[in-house]
Image 1 (cartoon, one colour):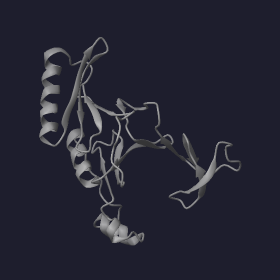
Image 2 (spheres, helix red, strand yellow):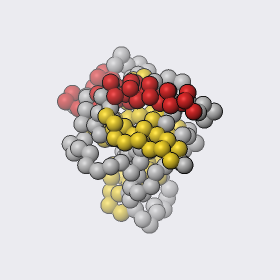
Image 3 (cartoon, one colour):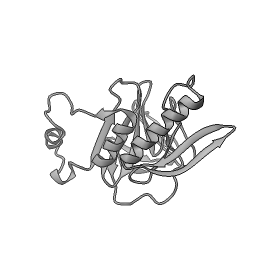
Length: 200
């Protein structure tokens, strides 16, 4: 942490490194990590506008964080949607339960989080954390799932979008609405917990 804390910090929260830092309205810099809470604006990771939160390890990688009622089920849906895989446990551990025990995590909290990753190591990690409250309003930030590169258009792209939408609806998504105007076309879906996202 820097010697002089920014003036906008007040209050206090505990970080994963055990360092006492302050409440954040927009973000908090903790050593080499910046945690961004999204309130009003959409931010982008590559071609993925992200929904709930974005954890950035500076100059390195990004993770999208979802609040969830059932983290494992929501992670399974998004792994299918993005061709991701469940994140393996850290080196030296057979499973996440063993890792949880090693850090003193209560057994009743073992299912409170889940993560999926891009096997090609190109897209952001998605992390799902259990929260008691449900989603109540439309997302201010969301994910776009691109079915092909920008060079694919016309009927071919429509076919690919349609196939992806059908796959995701069968996996538990629901249709929200469709858009088609001068800015482009998209099918807007809701994941199994109601988070909006686009197939484009």
